[in-house]
Length: 468
Image 1 (cartoon, helix red, strand yellow):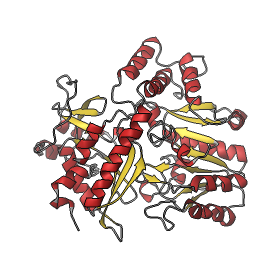
Image 2 (tube, one colour):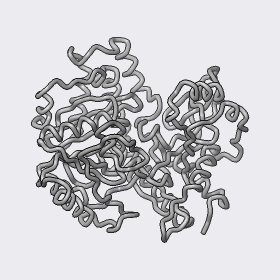
Image 3 (cartoon, helix red, strand yellow):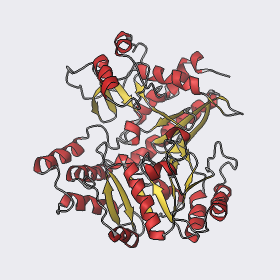
Image 4 (cartoon, rainbow, N blue to C red):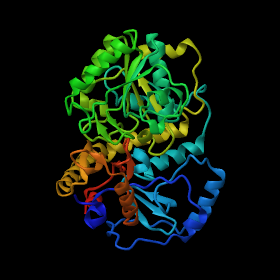
């Protein structure tokens, strides 16, 4: 068994995120030594951030501890003060450059401060920052039209929100209103948000408070790595039918799932699962909801939306994160018939469809096309996954490499046969990787999976810095 501590090469290869600390004293931050020795040389990059003269780490940490919620945590033993960003790179208070392989949790799609997106934001902000959707404005209509053009089938009606949680909340309500049923089926290990209905649909104890959560049934997760049936999607789907038969009246409101579970550790649903599950749910009168908050918007490379990889067309699609490249925006897309249920009462969102946010979203779609970022995600992601699999062959601590495009996961285990989560090891590695200038996320139910979700402008040369 090879341990991370004994292999510097693996430390570079293991794609570490940071340990979450709920608190850190300002004194400890101030006393922490600088550590960048031995960092790999970054590729040349034609940008130097302006000198930073704002508050330093210690001062910010002190204010954060005093004025912000104690529920907020940060990565790393010595937290980063990120003050600048450009494309796939971030810069700290000392001007040190970091390769961003996390993308703000799969949010930065085109790259940090992409000039076309910034121009769209600034131009719109100069005209009007906010009016209300009660008045007409072309920005929201133009973006809705462009977004609808990316959807298959009759998915042509868009409702804008501020986040993925809001989008999923709305989607679940629509399904219940349209069907007249209350029961929702979601998957174990899935994450859909932290509001009332979405917390109920989420199936990881780490993200659930002890509050009322009703009408949700969590079906067996079709996890090819840890699941009982390997990659046989149809066998997992039988649990959907059993859930309907034994846990409901036989009629359900809907089924919600990610095609690739993000917070759950970049878990690809077993092949053939969604077609079988969708068929069972629809026969029970339910609607099928695709949560594309992390897997959507060209990130998987092979398709624009994650669900397309399983050959299905949902009844409702939710999205956020990548569609705004960092601007707060989410959306629900459904059919004209289903959308009519919201006219039964007044349903409103003050900032959903804000002109600045929708102008940014429209610019994102244009950049994706102009710079062929979906194709880049496929080429670079395939290359990176191949390199990671090669590392897996050399290092026993890498139990699984999975995902598509630039939505990749690397699961660390201390025993490949037992698949024992390598919790302590991943925490150690995350700090080494940061010190070497590479930032990656962490997730999975056991917190032992590296999440690689960089901006889609990531290059093969950048990938080499992860796998060197």
